[in-house]
Length: 253
Image 1 (cartoon, rainbow, N blue to C red):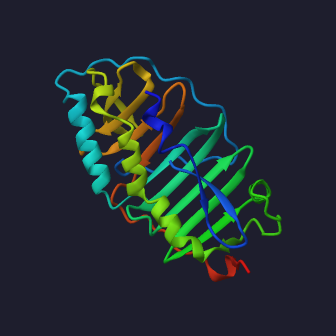
Image 2: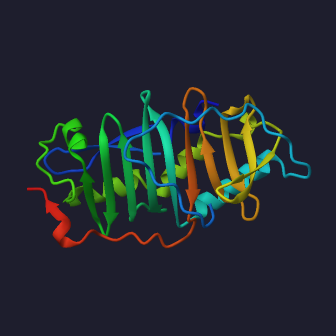
Image 3: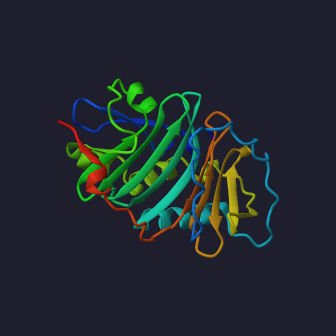
């Protein structure tokens, strides 16, 4: 199921205002903390098993999908982290944000494009990035790596493009009941007992892990043509996202 990760986790280019800066963005479980993205992406993990063992008495795959979708779309906030592939290059993603996109904290890392953190808080957007990132965007690398660059003109566009709701909606558009295997498995993921539903061609072509207790998304995995894995957490929680201190902010002229 190449569409499991194609749309929400593929590349998006968003203009974030100020001096023509273009920032490369990728869009793309209860109470566990998402694994932190490392500074340098590593090779993808081994491919997932091609099949899952059936679990007796499990709900149907379609019922699990529909409950997970309804809960995700209704959520006020969430976090996810993991890795996706963009043009054959692995990108690490760490996302925390609200459903309407007004507040978010996103960190992206690739070996070729560097590392960037984008904060959207209180109608402002702030970017903190390393020299490799700014160079890849064609921007003079005069911004200190420990400072945030303020680009307020981008706030509304950024919020519209990268709301949690928008990303979740696209993700579930790419997964339809007709594509699912009838076999429902079980697996403990990040300490959470989860249902596992997969593509009809097997787990190696995409899977969705959903908590048994409250039908929240725990993990998405991609397909052989669009590999990746994203782990979800902190559904409907206060994510503690705040604007950077004023002495850490640089304003673009």
